Length: 377
Length: 98
Image 1 (cartoon, rainbow over the protein chains, first blue to last red):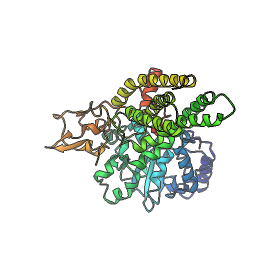
Image 2 (cartoon, rainbow over the protein chains, first blue to last red):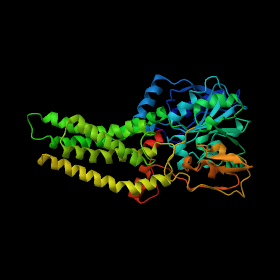
Image 3 (tube, rainbow over the protein chains, first blue to last red):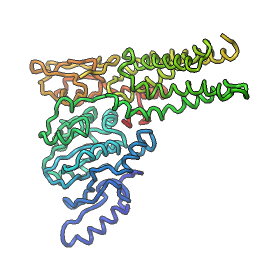
Image 4 (cartoon, chains in turn orange, brown):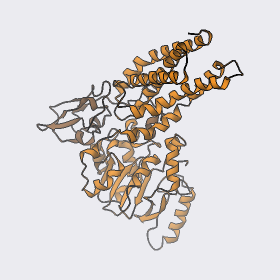
């Protein structure tokens, strides 16, 4: 979906203008183009709610098959950077002036995870322009921020639609939003909602009270594995390099070439799987707090297992270990970006201390690999 | 609840007890349960769980909390080093799709 700023000439707006002309004589007519998407309207919009002389798109609380497939693809980094919804105001159910306003990011995965929890609830959804980035990352960057909220309150003229003047923000927006400044500058009170959208129904039915679990970020196995595919997709240079190394290594051509090729390419390419799937799965079990060390330990284990499985000589075994360790260590270090608990100071420390040892180990490993071609130990 | 530990977590976090009124905003916004209220003041109870996201500092109405925040993402830091800028994941990292 390609998103552009409001285009007054878009078909959506034209339709709205035509409609408003038709109905102008009788009653205030809806004004379209209120949410900044271009025609055709997104499939999740089921209709329009006329309110305060404009029309607000009503969104479905059910995810379509397409939503689910797209959401799954996005987890594999396919189309992820353009997976966005138009910023602006949406409605769920039949909200009125007293209904709650839920604030969300315009990353479609965030938006979908919110709306699918809202069946049977009448609410407004104010979608901020976070450039298609999820709430927490956007808050860290400041795009899910105080100014952006004030901008969207102003541009949607939210004050004319709701009288409750209360915004429920996802708690993970807090690094970017100063709640007291929002109140001061807009008159809208901020209530910090739960971390996870699935807790919103019970949060709302409890009079907007959160229990401790609703406040806490979790990082269980399911959370870790949900983000792992993106990391695997990003690690494509590893299998590519593995193939590039194994092709000449397996020479001479002829008898057993492909066997020799596979027995090197598979273990090397597999370091990508070790670093992006096995690493997050075993994260709490791997030793030390440093992701790079956790990764190095896993990499050594991977290299040893590969050497045993393929029955290599000592030199090639040492080579596999010395190559696997830094590759898995680097992929593990990158998982800090997906984790929910790593400070920048700690990540900086790791980057400073680990890159040189990684490079040395890799160079040594490659050298031993070459040596193993010519020496038999 | 088990808290995840990381290197240097929470080292930059400090509360000015003189300014703290014990309003509890930091407890409300912290995703890792770092704070508790004790004797009408917020205190750091689990420093190692603090990832320095900056939510508490941003929202303390009295400006009593100082924390140096930033994305704890190695790719962003490496990117920044290469370009000679502040850590910047450029939205290409796995983090932003989570």
